[in-house]
Amino acid sequence: MKYLFIFILSICQFSMVNAQAWTKPKGEGFYKLDYTLIHTNQVFDPGGEVVPFRTLGNHTFSFYGERGITDKFTIQAYIPFLVRNVLNETKGAQSGTILEPGIAHNNFGDVDIAFRYALPFGKLPVSATLLLGLPTGNSTQDSGLFTGDGEFNQMIKLSTGFGKTKWWTQFGVGFNHRTQGFSNEIRYDGEFGYKLFNEKLLAMFKLSGIESMNNGTEGASSTGLFSNNVEYLSPGLEFLYYVKQNYGVSFRAAGAVKGQNVLAAPSFSLGIFMQ
Amino acid sequence: MKHLFLVILGISLLSSCIGTDIVEETEVLEQVIISSNISSIKIGEEAQMEAFFTNKYGITEDQQIVWSTSTPDVISISVNGLAKGLQQGEAIIEGRVGDVIGKRTIQVSQDGGSNTMTSTRSGTFMSAGAGSYTVAGDVMVVTEGGKSKIVVSDNFKSSIGPSLYLMLTNHTNGSYMVMNNNPVVNGTSAQISNARLTKFSGSMTWEVPSVVDVKSYKYVLLYCTLGPVFGYAELK
Image 1 (cartoon, rainbow over the protein chains, first blue to last red):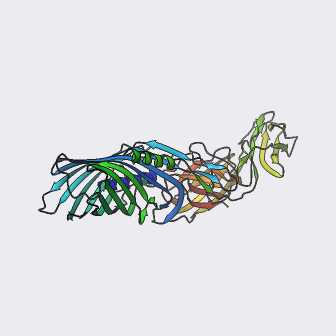
Image 2: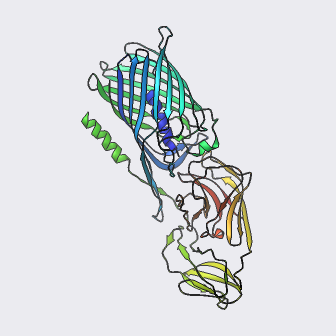
Image 3: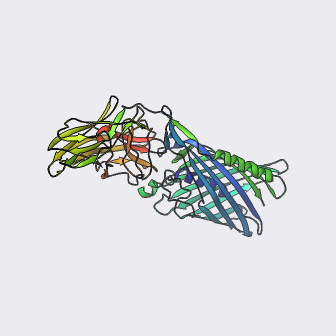
């Protein structure tokens, strides 16, 4: 089971790098430390039905950063430096016997590196992103509580958006090529953001999704329920509150309204950021 | 900022411990399971019989096994289960806990010969109804010369699962014990595959661990240790 865990990784990564029609001005950056929690006992199975599951918890501590190298070129990194996966023990209701012991694994996750370039499309901001998913996580544990998928993926994505003083919106769509027999994916997202309280609070509604092309091999699928042929449509809310001009706190909640091979549960994130 | 960091750390520590899922259990027959894979011995040869008792939830309990033989002239057995071949013939060794009895037929011969008895039970997989997970195809449990194997046919096909194990069971509700590379055997189930399956269709064969008496189980079953039973075949 690159279990839910890969799903979680997917959704975390995607939340981190979504939309982003604009590049950062040269020398400017945005950096964030984040804790994300998913805890559930239900999944969307391969047919999209919600079925009961042994209770799983995923705890991801990550760093996200982006920095403008030039006004038109930004680099990004998502580094899940600690991923803790927890599987509950099972206990017989009548006999009181522990049937299966619980499992917990801590490890490094899969790192994403991305390069975003502003394309010359007149006044409309359009950017192209090349994202490289590095197999730095663990994908070999017998228990299946993996923290990485073991494959090197490459995503090309186009994003655009527009905005006014108080609000903005942006959209993106990408093609994710996966190796090691994993199915390729179409990833998409949209975002609407609004600035409140004299721009101290940014409120964002996000919608992101993955459509699998289901063209992977059986071998890749067997490595984990959530590693291959993952699909979801996930709405979410994110808030960034500036405590001071250059740093603040963040909160994000996202769920899946439809899915395939993913957890049927919301994710919650708390973080601190600076820019 | 420091306080927020501590709050986040506290939440993560509190929520990241291993919890407990309660699973409803189905009652099964109490059993004495003879785990010694002995079906024939030579005249004068000794063999240590082993057995364990499982309660109505299939859980192994530490109980004193009382041993006896149907034909003391052919095989003798001590209170500790040490059997000895005395003359050519056949005897049924019984291990008893109260009214619960486990039996094993043992042949005695001059040369210790091999057990040539063959038995086959078969069934057809059906899905267990857990979402869209499906299993189909034919399965046979074949016992030859005291050794058993489980064979699925070319038409076998299962949904892909991340932690799927082949089991022999006495019910289909999913309250089983599984241990990677250390198969668990009790009155509810016997784990047949050592590790999670990585192939999900076509003909395959699994050797049944010698401690497993296949006659003690009603179903061949595919169980995902993360939750659902994918499917099972009732053996006939």
